[in-house]
Amino acid sequence: MNLKEIERVVGMIQTHIFRNSNAYSAGMLKSHFRGSGLQFREHQIYVPGDDVRFIDWKLSARSQNTYVKTFEEERNVEIVVMMDLSQTLLYGFEDVSKLQAMIEIIGLLYILAGETHDLVRVVIWSSKTINLPPKKGKEGLTLFISMLERLGLIDEDGKVIIKQKGNLNSHTEENKIAQIKSFLARRKEVIYLGDLSLVKNKELWGKILDKKNMNCFRIYSPVDKNTDLPFLFKAKNPLTNRGVVTDLKSMEKDPLFMKQRFKEIGVHERYLEKFVKELV
Image 1 (tube, rainbow, N blue to C red):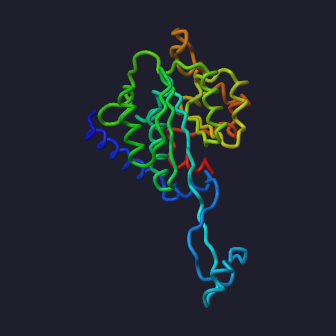
Image 2: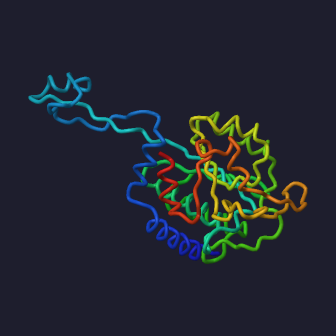
Image 3: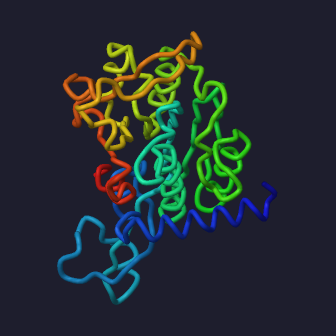
């Protein structure tokens, strides 16, 4: 896609996101990801009920009024989104794949970051690690969509290309966990998005799931919950290139994958609204 085509797709995605999210999204995001402190905003005339601790006595002494200092939250939050690609993301519900839902959720984060003056960094785990620089608003969404098109994940209309050749993800779990830990150590707000089909080493993941600034979301479809099926999906192991059967529904009874540790977002739901609500 050229720049005009990318901008057209970005506009389409923005319209879809605005239609399917809600007016409280920016406020919810701001309340969940706290800034690093407070910065002075302005002086206001004191009225009964104002906090007397913030009275500016020096300024008040030079005038006929009593003034208080007002503050606003200093926003320098960087949200890091780990996008865990896999073949099992290519199916979903009624023409909405799990990958499509993930793309829209990340698009929503870019748009909200433009409102809250935060930054979003997207790390895509595909055949290699793609680390997009921190951006916000339309600029970030444009960069993100451009990269997805270069990876061959979406077409010229911004729709997911279901027929994919080769492996979508060649990273070991050790490598993924190491990357997540590096961001957590720098006190970044980390959001994991995936369907957990490539999560096998429960001990490794268990060490990071309870971190305060770690937010894990499992994207699922109704098929993943269908207990009548003997198995759910056959795909290639990204490391051995051999066919493997992935049983996503078996995760339901595993403590590691309980909802309190991995929040679940279904593609058959109003997933953009639910994502924001689950953040708080």
